[in-house]
Length: 398
Image (tube, rainbow, N blue to C red; front, side):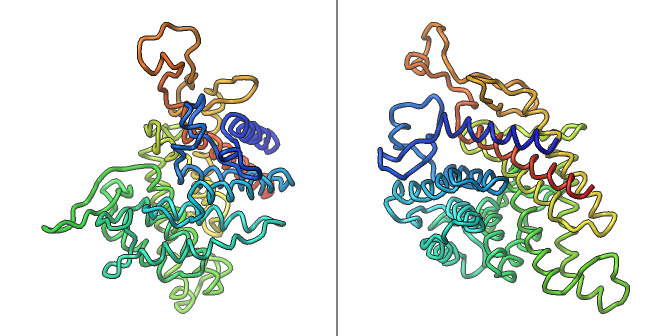
């Protein structure tokens, strides 16, 4: 099964690269993904290009290269980083949204883990720009520059970035703030807090995105604290001193256990398929973000206690069940998949094949369906990469 899912992830990669990838303004050695297929003229020219979608496209390219680090994949990764820089007018920091910039920083940092990929000289300045955006009073990130909305979509990837940079105390502060203010009665992470003149207003919207990034942040923090404390196994803790050393780590592991259970109970079918409605546009990425970090939990959470093993198994079950459902409900065009926005129903074809024009969109040959968006297709690709990773891990454990 490991080879099967790797092959399916390869097909998802090929589908997006063949349908969406192209040079930026015909400049050699650049690459970006056009935001829709079939695209409009403006989309082909990258008038609309979505900085943070490109960050996730880069992250998926890295996923594929981590499975099989080929020269062609490395070249596309380098060309994509160059394409993002050129389309953003040479400054990666020229973006008001901290969530967008955090996603790009995470993807670029992961790209540097690949052999024969040189460190990107602008990554450090991007990370510094994000850090400088931290609210000096509260110690968390706003959604965007000049904004008083402090939300999880910025702070989740921001905390993951901080933890991977070794800035554990700052990452912990963000996650602890989220858990102090933004957990609802069902154990879900809410969207954020608007700081108004008459006091803070909780924005109670629930998104798969927020659950995913908080899982990722808690995992990075727990693993870093575990390493710092020199813990090799939770089952070997048998003294008060060892328990005290493990307490900080266990706090974040407990968060992970609770959040994975909340997702399984409230965002998935009884068989484990993630079925939260996210639609098109930016929402098209939300389920993909969740399964990326569910896979991280399934693979990286230490399996040294019964509760951890149960959490890993539950996270893996949701990833695999979702991947099986998405693959079953895919469409194929020229032998390559199109994935649905709803992971429990058949994907729709984003074409106007001979039907009479009734709307302006149809007159130009385009029907507005979610499957047309790059974001939706990237979520499908992320899911298959996550499943391939989980299956490889499970085969290695046998």
